[in-house]
Amino acid sequence: MSNQLERGPVRTTRAEALLASVGERGVLRSFYDEDVGVDLMQEADGTSEAREMAARIRPASGPVLELAAGTGRLTFPFLKLGFEMTALELSTAMLATLRGQLEDAPADLRDRCTLVQGDMSDFALGKRFGTVVISYGSINLLDDADRPGLYASVREHLVPGGQFMISMADTSRSESLERQQELSGRSGRRYVLHVRRSPAEGIQEITTCPADETSAPFVVCTSRLRLLEANQVVRELEQAGFDVIAPTSFRSAGDRGGHDALLLEASPKSDPA
Ligand code: SAM
Image (cartoon, rainbow, N blue to C red; front, side, top):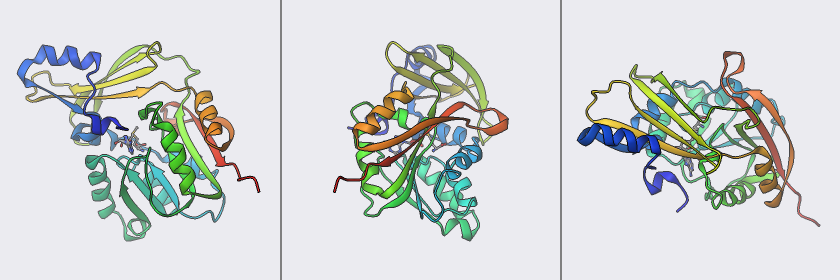
């Protein structure tokens, strides 16, 4: 099985401790399949990330396929820049939110966006695109065994000379092994986000819980990401038949902070005649 959403929530170290401390009030959920993920992700702005990608898209290269679109953090900026989009997402909760936001958007934007529920490591849409994009952190959701499926599916959906853009963390910057912060969601609800990195295991665990310790139910949401070096993804892309342009660095939220990010751009190698 190719993804966390189908396998059910990951029992992170932090989740185990929280659930043990709250007893019967505790409920474990997958971050991306729960209101909490939707609530927190809607607060994030993808304008500068979408602009970084859009600046590299060749003129008149046609519709863009966005993988793991979430609640549309990149989808809406792309639509506002005038692109026609197909947004693929696996989570029913994320897709429902994206659909709701599109319904509320001006007809000009709404009419240029197609939504598809699907797994980015194994999809067949029956059409090709000039560009396929995948946003910051999303490739890290796939296991080593599942990324080849992503590359193969993307190859099958790109026109000759098409572009595949992957935004990912710049792991050359040192980050603490454990951090915790309080965040607000779109609803105004407050959450505690806990992040644990384990370079030895090659993973990063994300755990959220309500900031209000008396909440009932006390919903603990988790996700597990693979720590991936850009070099590893470059090697995998080359093995999967792509030519890769060297990664470029950018700030995922422009002047307003965000993450140190890398953008990888790849094109399918042309088949030998
Ligand atoms: N693109 C959005 C953004 O930038 O805010 C969402 C990014 S979030 C890091 C990753 C997204 O991937 C979540 O919406 C999650 O539901 C989705 N996802 C997880 N596994 C997936 C899979 N196998 N195929 C498609 N989407 C998946």
